[in-house]
Image (cartoon, rainbow, N blue to C red; front, side, top):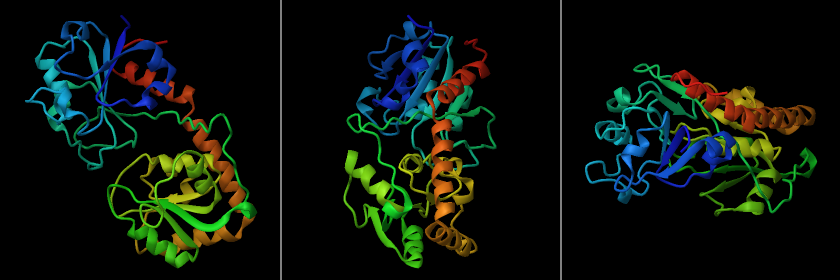
Length: 303
Protein backbone atom coordinates (compact mmCIF):
# COMPACT_ATOMS: atom_id res chain seq x y z
CA UNK A 1 0.00 0.00 0.00
CA UNK A 2 1.35 3.40 -0.99
CA UNK A 3 1.04 6.67 0.91
CA UNK A 4 -1.48 8.21 -1.48
CA UNK A 5 -4.37 7.17 -3.69
CA UNK A 6 -6.11 8.63 -6.73
CA UNK A 7 -9.83 8.13 -7.35
CA UNK A 8 -11.26 8.71 -10.82
CA UNK A 9 -14.52 7.97 -12.63
CA UNK A 10 -13.14 7.92 -16.16
CA UNK A 11 -9.76 6.79 -17.37
CA UNK A 12 -7.73 9.97 -17.76
CA UNK A 13 -4.26 9.11 -18.94
CA UNK A 14 -2.92 12.62 -18.49
CA UNK A 15 -3.01 12.16 -14.71
CA UNK A 16 -0.56 9.30 -15.00
CA UNK A 17 1.84 11.17 -17.28
CA UNK A 18 3.17 12.61 -14.03
CA UNK A 19 5.62 10.00 -12.75
CA UNK A 20 5.08 11.07 -9.14
CA UNK A 21 1.38 10.19 -9.36
CA UNK A 22 1.95 7.04 -11.38
CA UNK A 23 4.57 5.76 -8.93
CA UNK A 24 3.42 7.09 -5.55
CA UNK A 25 -0.39 6.80 -5.79
CA UNK A 26 -2.52 3.67 -5.72
CA UNK A 27 -5.18 3.89 -8.42
CA UNK A 28 -8.89 3.26 -7.89
CA UNK A 29 -11.77 3.48 -10.29
CA UNK A 30 -14.34 5.24 -8.14
CA UNK A 31 -17.02 2.55 -7.94
CA UNK A 32 -18.80 3.37 -4.70
CA UNK A 33 -20.40 -0.06 -4.66
CA UNK A 34 -17.03 -1.84 -4.50
CA UNK A 35 -14.60 0.52 -2.76
CA UNK A 36 -13.02 -0.77 0.44
CA UNK A 37 -13.55 2.22 2.71
CA UNK A 38 -11.36 0.82 5.49
CA UNK A 39 -8.44 0.64 3.06
CA UNK A 40 -9.10 4.17 1.77
CA UNK A 41 -9.10 5.47 5.32
CA UNK A 42 -5.45 4.42 5.77
CA UNK A 43 -4.03 6.72 3.10
CA UNK A 44 -2.40 10.04 3.94
CA UNK A 45 -4.07 11.77 1.01
CA UNK A 46 -6.62 10.93 -1.67
CA UNK A 47 -6.58 12.85 -4.93
CA UNK A 48 -10.02 12.86 -6.56
CA UNK A 49 -10.20 13.60 -10.29
CA UNK A 50 -13.74 13.45 -11.62
CA UNK A 51 -15.38 14.09 -14.96
CA UNK A 52 -18.96 15.43 -14.59
CA UNK A 53 -21.58 12.94 -15.73
CA UNK A 54 -19.15 10.13 -16.56
CA UNK A 55 -20.17 6.57 -15.68
CA UNK A 56 -22.98 7.30 -13.19
CA UNK A 57 -23.53 3.54 -12.82
CA UNK A 58 -20.43 3.48 -10.60
CA UNK A 59 -22.18 5.43 -7.87
CA UNK A 60 -24.90 4.68 -5.38
CA UNK A 61 -28.34 6.05 -6.13
CA UNK A 62 -28.15 8.86 -3.59
CA UNK A 63 -24.94 10.16 -5.19
CA UNK A 64 -25.94 9.55 -8.81
CA UNK A 65 -24.10 11.63 -11.37
CA UNK A 66 -23.33 14.43 -8.92
CA UNK A 67 -19.68 13.56 -8.42
CA UNK A 68 -19.10 16.81 -6.55
CA UNK A 69 -20.85 15.07 -3.62
CA UNK A 70 -18.45 12.12 -3.43
CA UNK A 71 -16.14 13.78 -0.85
CA UNK A 72 -19.18 14.25 1.39
CA UNK A 73 -20.25 10.63 0.88
CA UNK A 74 -16.78 9.32 1.71
CA UNK A 75 -16.40 11.43 4.84
CA UNK A 76 -19.85 10.44 6.11
CA UNK A 77 -19.03 6.79 5.47
CA UNK A 78 -15.89 6.81 7.58
CA UNK A 79 -13.03 7.95 5.34
CA UNK A 80 -11.90 10.67 7.74
CA UNK A 81 -8.13 10.22 8.07
CA UNK A 82 -6.79 11.16 4.57
CA UNK A 83 -6.53 14.67 3.24
CA UNK A 84 -8.82 15.17 0.24
CA UNK A 85 -7.51 16.90 -2.90
CA UNK A 86 -10.50 17.47 -5.17
CA UNK A 87 -10.56 18.29 -8.88
CA UNK A 88 -13.35 18.48 -11.44
CA UNK A 89 -12.36 18.10 -15.08
CA UNK A 90 -13.53 20.69 -17.60
CA UNK A 91 -16.33 22.27 -15.63
CA UNK A 92 -17.00 25.78 -16.81
CA UNK A 93 -18.56 27.34 -13.77
CA UNK A 94 -18.28 30.84 -12.44
CA UNK A 95 -14.86 32.35 -12.02
CA UNK A 96 -15.71 34.22 -8.82
CA UNK A 97 -17.64 31.72 -6.68
CA UNK A 98 -16.73 28.07 -6.08
CA UNK A 99 -19.89 26.33 -7.36
CA UNK A 100 -19.71 23.28 -5.07
CA UNK A 101 -19.83 25.17 -1.80
CA UNK A 102 -21.58 22.23 -0.15
CA UNK A 103 -18.38 20.13 -0.32
CA UNK A 104 -16.00 22.81 1.00
CA UNK A 105 -16.09 21.51 4.61
CA UNK A 106 -15.19 18.02 3.37
CA UNK A 107 -12.19 18.74 1.13
CA UNK A 108 -8.78 20.06 2.09
CA UNK A 109 -7.66 21.51 -1.25
CA UNK A 110 -9.31 22.18 -4.62
CA UNK A 111 -7.08 21.64 -7.63
CA UNK A 112 -7.80 23.59 -10.81
CA UNK A 113 -6.24 23.82 -14.27
CA UNK A 114 -7.56 27.32 -14.99
CA UNK A 115 -6.31 29.05 -11.83
CA UNK A 116 -9.63 30.47 -10.68
CA UNK A 117 -9.69 32.83 -7.72
CA UNK A 118 -12.87 32.25 -5.73
CA UNK A 119 -14.30 34.71 -3.23
CA UNK A 120 -15.83 32.00 -1.06
CA UNK A 121 -12.72 29.88 -0.44
CA UNK A 122 -8.94 30.08 -0.23
CA UNK A 123 -8.53 26.33 -0.78
CA UNK A 124 -7.76 26.48 -4.52
CA UNK A 125 -4.40 25.57 -6.04
CA UNK A 126 -3.31 25.59 -9.68
CA UNK A 127 -1.99 22.43 -11.34
CA UNK A 128 -1.18 21.43 -14.92
CA UNK A 129 -0.46 18.23 -16.78
CA UNK A 130 2.26 17.25 -19.26
CA UNK A 131 1.27 16.92 -22.91
CA UNK A 132 2.75 14.06 -24.87
CA UNK A 133 2.07 14.02 -28.58
CA UNK A 134 2.96 10.77 -30.30
CA UNK A 135 2.95 10.35 -34.07
CA UNK A 136 4.29 6.81 -34.18
CA UNK A 137 7.68 8.03 -33.06
CA UNK A 138 7.90 10.84 -35.62
CA UNK A 139 8.43 14.44 -34.47
CA UNK A 140 5.78 17.06 -35.20
CA UNK A 141 6.66 19.04 -38.30
CA UNK A 142 7.21 22.74 -37.47
CA UNK A 143 6.57 24.86 -40.54
CA UNK A 144 8.11 28.26 -41.16
CA UNK A 145 5.96 31.22 -42.24
CA UNK A 146 6.51 30.70 -45.98
CA UNK A 147 5.62 26.98 -45.71
CA UNK A 148 2.23 27.65 -44.15
CA UNK A 149 -1.08 27.95 -45.97
CA UNK A 150 -3.48 30.88 -46.03
CA UNK A 151 -6.09 29.67 -43.57
CA UNK A 152 -6.97 30.29 -39.93
CA UNK A 153 -7.58 27.21 -37.81
CA UNK A 154 -9.95 26.85 -34.89
CA UNK A 155 -12.52 24.55 -33.35
CA UNK A 156 -16.09 24.69 -32.16
CA UNK A 157 -16.25 23.94 -28.45
CA UNK A 158 -19.11 22.16 -26.74
CA UNK A 159 -19.71 25.30 -24.67
CA UNK A 160 -20.30 28.72 -26.14
CA UNK A 161 -20.57 29.60 -29.82
CA UNK A 162 -17.66 30.34 -32.20
CA UNK A 163 -19.32 33.49 -33.55
CA UNK A 164 -16.59 35.87 -32.25
CA UNK A 165 -13.95 33.77 -33.98
CA UNK A 166 -15.88 33.66 -37.25
CA UNK A 167 -16.45 37.41 -37.14
CA UNK A 168 -12.73 38.02 -36.66
CA UNK A 169 -11.76 35.66 -39.48
CA UNK A 170 -14.09 37.47 -41.87
CA UNK A 171 -12.34 40.73 -40.99
CA UNK A 172 -8.82 39.28 -41.27
CA UNK A 173 -9.56 37.87 -44.69
CA UNK A 174 -7.95 34.42 -44.64
CA UNK A 175 -9.91 31.23 -45.23
CA UNK A 176 -11.56 29.74 -42.12
CA UNK A 177 -10.85 26.10 -41.26
CA UNK A 178 -12.91 25.38 -38.16
CA UNK A 179 -13.46 21.87 -36.83
CA UNK A 180 -17.16 21.48 -36.16
CA UNK A 181 -18.10 24.30 -38.53
CA UNK A 182 -16.62 23.73 -42.00
CA UNK A 183 -14.14 20.96 -41.14
CA UNK A 184 -14.78 17.44 -39.90
CA UNK A 185 -12.96 15.80 -37.03
CA UNK A 186 -9.24 15.31 -37.43
CA UNK A 187 -6.99 12.87 -35.62
CA UNK A 188 -3.32 12.09 -35.18
CA UNK A 189 -0.99 13.12 -37.96
CA UNK A 190 -3.78 14.75 -39.98
CA UNK A 191 -4.72 16.93 -37.01
CA UNK A 192 -1.20 18.17 -36.37
CA UNK A 193 -0.53 18.70 -40.07
CA UNK A 194 -3.71 20.83 -40.25
CA UNK A 195 -2.69 22.80 -37.15
CA UNK A 196 0.92 23.21 -38.26
CA UNK A 197 0.04 24.38 -41.77
CA UNK A 198 -2.28 27.13 -40.51
CA UNK A 199 -1.00 30.70 -40.59
CA UNK A 200 -2.86 31.48 -37.38
CA UNK A 201 -5.12 29.81 -34.80
CA UNK A 202 -8.01 31.60 -33.07
CA UNK A 203 -9.84 30.42 -29.95
CA UNK A 204 -12.69 32.85 -29.36
CA UNK A 205 -16.14 31.78 -28.18
CA UNK A 206 -19.14 33.44 -26.57
CA UNK A 207 -18.70 31.52 -23.30
CA UNK A 208 -16.34 29.16 -21.54
CA UNK A 209 -13.35 28.90 -19.31
CA UNK A 210 -10.60 26.43 -20.07
CA UNK A 211 -6.95 25.46 -20.00
CA UNK A 212 -7.20 25.13 -23.82
CA UNK A 213 -5.21 22.15 -24.97
CA UNK A 214 -5.48 23.76 -28.39
CA UNK A 215 -3.24 26.55 -27.13
CA UNK A 216 -0.53 24.12 -26.07
CA UNK A 217 -0.80 22.06 -29.25
CA UNK A 218 -0.56 25.19 -31.40
CA UNK A 219 2.62 26.15 -29.58
CA UNK A 220 4.18 22.75 -30.28
CA UNK A 221 3.07 23.03 -33.92
CA UNK A 222 4.79 26.43 -34.24
CA UNK A 223 1.53 28.23 -35.08
CA UNK A 224 0.70 31.44 -33.15
CA UNK A 225 -2.66 31.34 -31.38
CA UNK A 226 -4.82 34.25 -30.26
CA UNK A 227 -7.67 33.88 -27.78
CA UNK A 228 -9.25 34.87 -24.51
CA UNK A 229 -6.87 35.80 -21.70
CA UNK A 230 -8.54 33.34 -19.33
CA UNK A 231 -7.72 30.45 -21.67
CA UNK A 232 -4.72 29.54 -19.57
CA UNK A 233 -2.40 27.98 -22.15
CA UNK A 234 -2.90 30.86 -24.59
CA UNK A 235 -1.92 33.37 -21.91
CA UNK A 236 1.11 31.30 -20.90
CA UNK A 237 2.25 30.82 -24.49
CA UNK A 238 2.28 34.55 -25.17
CA UNK A 239 0.27 37.01 -23.10
CA UNK A 240 0.59 39.62 -25.86
CA UNK A 241 -1.67 37.42 -28.02
CA UNK A 242 -4.17 36.73 -25.23
CA UNK A 243 -6.60 39.58 -25.90
CA UNK A 244 -10.18 39.34 -24.69
CA UNK A 245 -12.87 39.64 -27.32
CA UNK A 246 -14.88 42.82 -26.84
CA UNK A 247 -16.02 45.45 -29.30
CA UNK A 248 -13.53 47.82 -27.69
CA UNK A 249 -10.69 45.31 -28.26
CA UNK A 250 -11.64 44.50 -31.85
CA UNK A 251 -9.10 46.89 -33.39
CA UNK A 252 -6.34 45.65 -31.09
CA UNK A 253 -7.01 42.02 -32.03
CA UNK A 254 -7.11 42.80 -35.76
CA UNK A 255 -3.96 44.91 -35.57
CA UNK A 256 -2.12 42.09 -33.81
CA UNK A 257 -3.33 39.53 -36.34
CA UNK A 258 -2.20 41.79 -39.16
CA UNK A 259 1.22 42.22 -37.55
CA UNK A 260 1.63 38.45 -37.28
CA UNK A 261 0.66 37.97 -40.91
CA UNK A 262 2.90 40.70 -42.31
CA UNK A 263 5.93 40.87 -40.01
CA UNK A 264 7.77 37.58 -40.55
CA UNK A 265 10.43 38.36 -37.94
CA UNK A 266 7.80 39.01 -35.28
CA UNK A 267 5.94 35.88 -36.39
CA UNK A 268 9.07 33.79 -35.82
CA UNK A 269 9.66 35.39 -32.42
CA UNK A 270 6.10 34.42 -31.42
CA UNK A 271 6.60 30.86 -32.68
CA UNK A 272 9.72 30.38 -30.57
CA UNK A 273 8.36 32.18 -27.51
CA UNK A 274 5.18 30.11 -27.38
CA UNK A 275 7.03 26.83 -27.84
CA UNK A 276 9.53 27.59 -25.07
CA UNK A 277 6.93 28.91 -22.64
CA UNK A 278 4.57 25.96 -23.04
CA UNK A 279 7.32 23.33 -23.07
CA UNK A 280 8.68 24.68 -19.78
CA UNK A 281 5.28 25.19 -18.14
CA UNK A 282 4.01 21.66 -18.75
CA UNK A 283 7.28 19.79 -18.37
CA UNK A 284 7.03 16.66 -16.24
CA UNK A 285 9.32 18.30 -13.66
CA UNK A 286 7.19 21.44 -13.30
CA UNK A 287 3.93 19.48 -13.17
CA UNK A 288 5.36 17.09 -10.60
CA UNK A 289 6.47 19.93 -8.35
CA UNK A 290 3.00 21.51 -8.43
CA UNK A 291 1.41 18.30 -7.14
CA UNK A 292 4.06 17.93 -4.46
CA UNK A 293 3.38 21.52 -3.39
CA UNK A 294 -0.33 20.72 -3.23
CA UNK A 295 0.41 17.95 -0.73
CA UNK A 296 2.69 20.25 1.24
CA UNK A 297 -0.12 22.80 1.50
CA UNK A 298 -2.27 20.26 3.34
CA UNK A 299 0.55 19.40 5.74
CA UNK A 300 2.05 16.31 4.10
CA UNK A 301 5.83 16.00 3.82
CA UNK A 302 7.05 14.93 0.39
CA UNK A 303 10.60 15.02 -0.93
